[in-house]
Amino acid sequence: MADRRKFTQGQITKLHSANAGNLKLACVTVRHGLYRYLRRHNTPDLDNQVRGFTEAVINGEEDMGLVYGESEEAKVLADIVESVAAAVYIELNFDLDNYGWCHVHPTTVLNELCQKNGKHYQIKLQPRHETRNVSIADVYVDGKFVASGSSNKKKGAMRNAAKEAVNKL
Image (cartoon, rainbow, N blue to C red; front, side, top):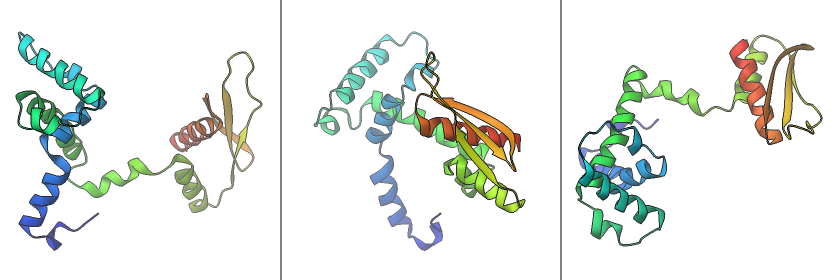
């Protein structure tokens, strides 16, 4: 995590502008379909504006900044992402260092957990299930079955099995 004390206020402002302008955040909201979760009543005009903005994002219109840069719908959509980010920040007790665990692959966590406790793990793929068309993986720690996971892809099944094993251990 970058130490913000190394940056001047002007540098932080430029960094924020480059990464968190209303237009960019509004596009994030559209791509993740977050607008539908906004509680709203009697806002058909805003709904129509957001619908137009959404179509522009989906169609990849290049001049969006000129049309939507400071628009009401871009601001409302950006506020949704900012609110989610704030909620996550509060949930992390205002310590972004706590966020790092979210990005660690479950197999890595399982490996570290087993190494720390002097244990050995194996993830074994079962033969592909013919009728359900899924891959199933099992996790064994010191030869004992711990957890199972499935997915339509082998890697996903192994990841899901590792995640379940970490939750159980």
